[in-house]
Length: 434
Image 1 (spheres, one colour):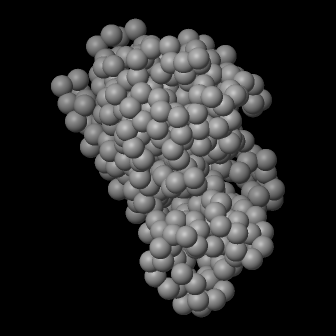
Image 2 (cartoon, one colour):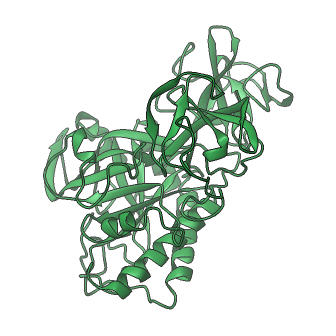
C-alpha cells in the first residue's frame, strides 16, 4: 500500500457437519443489499498509486497488463491529494474498462510502526470502526460507487506481539465490517501478512468478531502468479477461499506504458471490487419491469433515446436476438435488446453479471446441480466463510427451515439455509427469482 509520508499513505451428505450460525450474528453477519446493488469480482493484475491517475494516463495504461486500479477514497490517514477523484472521473475510467478498488485509510493500530499516524484508541475502537466505515461509504457514494461494492479498510503493519493492541484492532475491524454490511457494502481489509492478516485469521471462526468478506495482504515477494493467492503464512487455505483474496506483491517502483510513467504498487486479485452504473440510451420506447421478463409487471415507459443507468446484466425472457436483461439503478429491468450496449446478443463488458455475495455459515457446504439434495454434487465442498455469489433464488427441497435455494455464478446450487443473507426461511430481496 502507499506508505506513510507525513500522514499515512503506507493495508450434509456434504450439506451439514454442524449447526448453522445465525445469519445476523458474528462471524458471518448479513449484508443488507438495496435494490441498486450488485457485486463485481475482479480476477487479474492490479496496481495502486498514491494519487489517482488522470483519465489520459489510464487511457495510455490500457497497454499495461493491469485492468484494475486501487484508489484512495478517504480516511484521516490518507496522505495524498486526489484532484481526479470525482464522480465524472469514475464514470470515465470505468467506461474505459477499468475496475476500481476503493481504499480507505482510517484510524491505525495503537501500536502501529508509523509514528505520524492518527491512531484508534482501545476504549473507542468499536465506535471508531463504525464511524470510519460510515464515512468510507459516504465518500464512495459521492463518487458513484454503488452498494454491493467492496471497500478495503487499510490497516498498516503494527506490533503483532502486543495483545492489547491486537484486541483493539480486531474490535475496530469487526465494527467496520458490520457497518459495511448494514449499509449494503462488502467488507474488505488490507493488512500486513504478519500482523492484521494473521490476527484476522486467528479469529476467523470466533463469534466475538464479524468476519470481513475479503482479505488483501501485503506480501512483497515479487511473485505475481495466480498460485500465490494461496499458501499464505499463518492463514489457512480454507479461509477467504471463493473470490476473497488479493495480494500486494511489490511496493513503490516506476513502470511505464503508453509513454506514461507512474509510481505504483503491484497487486494480484481474485476478490470483490467496486460496482458502478454505466450510462446508455434506449433505442425505442420500452417498458421497465420488476424482473427480467415480459411476465413481470411494467413499472414505467422509457421514451426512445432516453438515458438509462445499467448496474448489471442477467438472463431472462428472450427478446429479439438476446436473453440478456439490464438491471437499472432503481432495481427495474429492461431487455438489453432495446438498450444501446455493445452487444445485441450477449453480455457487454465491462458491465458485470448481477450477483450478491454472502458468506456461508457452515463448513463443507455442498454445491448441487439442481435445487435439492437429490441432485448430484459438484466436486469440492465450500469451507465456512466462503462467499456464495448468488445470482437468483428458487424453491426446491426443504433444508432446515427453508425451501429456498440459491443459484451461484458458476451455475451450481446451495441451500439458502446456510447462506448469511436476510432470511433463512424465505426469499431475500433484492435477489431475483430464477
